[in-house]
Length: 377
Picture 1 (cartoon, rainbow, N blue to C red):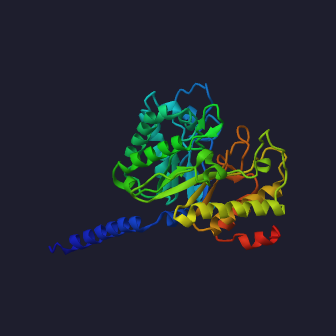
Picture 2 (tube, rainbow, N blue to C red):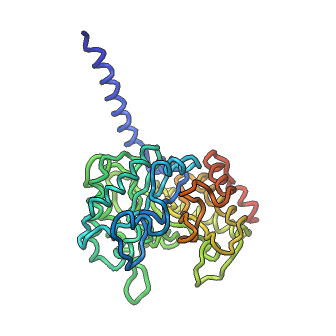
Picture 3 (tube, helix red, strand yellow):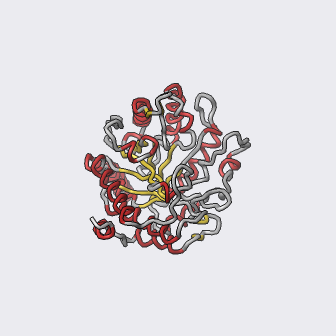
């Protein structure tokens, strides 16, 4: 029998793999972030943390804040509402020792969910979450931080470019007694993160890496004090969280509570912040991932204002090249205060908010030109 029936399919498969690898190298950071489109946070799940709480096993940790253990069906459900990215925050502190060595059972549970996400061709952002408070005590934590990322990089080196690493969440390095931010220490950590992942193998050489802004705050990150680490792969993005204005989006006791959003000044502030992100980072080839966007839902905030806020922020994230945003959702009304989607029942608490994300995923957005009219520029 001629070897051609065997050789030709083999050559075809090899050529597809080579084309795939070439395309990975050609994709810029901005192109990848554009493909990430809009995202959903699997919050209050693997990231759950209550200080001094005794955790006996991984199930205890995952369900600590009242949400069901993620499964394949949940991932499929999230995708059907138009989300092309799942931010998968992970708290490691319950399952690492004093040196940062990870319990094998925990990393296995994390990998299982990441596989389900990637199999659905959904981008997955994997990070270090509540542990960030520990790193914030100073540079003495760096060895533990590096060891943790070495293990994560090794475990996930075979996962394709749909997996993205985020260095940490809301890092806040303060200079003692001065109440000022120490940008040098943050750069030390972010550079260590980049070096550790790039010194790993396979897909980690070219994987998109997200560098956390100072306190994930737009003003503290859009400043000359904030420095970008060097990256031989040139595949970095910046992350911030967007809870602006705090008077509307949160229940912070230090701010005057506002129940409504949608004034001329509100639209103007939103536009100005996106322009700031564009000027500081996107125009320089560094895309922006807004890791968390949300409004507290369990108090007096006007529902129509919540809808308008989400539609506006996520619309701009689609219109602006190189910027994408992820909804922060705590899901369970008994434990969280930003609840949009009930993961247990596959139901949204407000169908109009559900429809907002479906509309945006299909390209139906409100454009910045409309905001200029609203804000009376």
